Length: 97
Image (cartoon, rainbow, N blue to C red; front, side, top):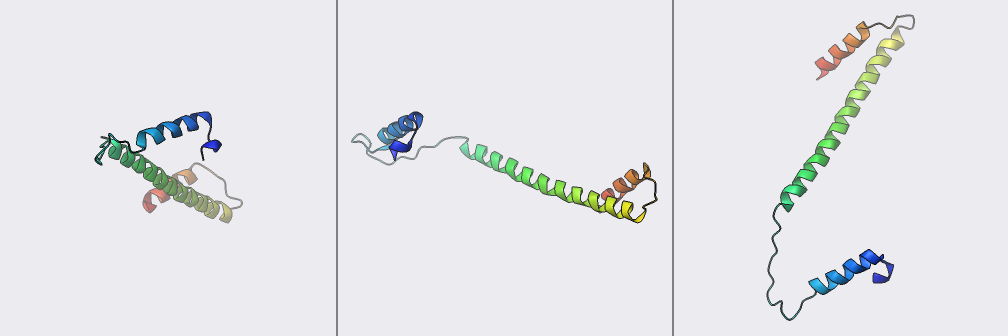
């Protein structure tokens, strides 16, 4: 296993093996408590969850806008595109929530 590691990986492997291996001085199994790890992990999870949720909402809005424009622009081939269509889009998106 250690032959496939880089020099830094080999160094880490050697130190972990010597420090984690049971020695004659280590008589009882004690739990090591690292403060703050749970909060960091939960904060990272929340950030990932929020990013995924935002992406899904963004895609839903984007598809709604495409449907609106295809519906309004396809029926009126001769229709002029003016600023009112933007206002209609805002009103429809607001009413849709």
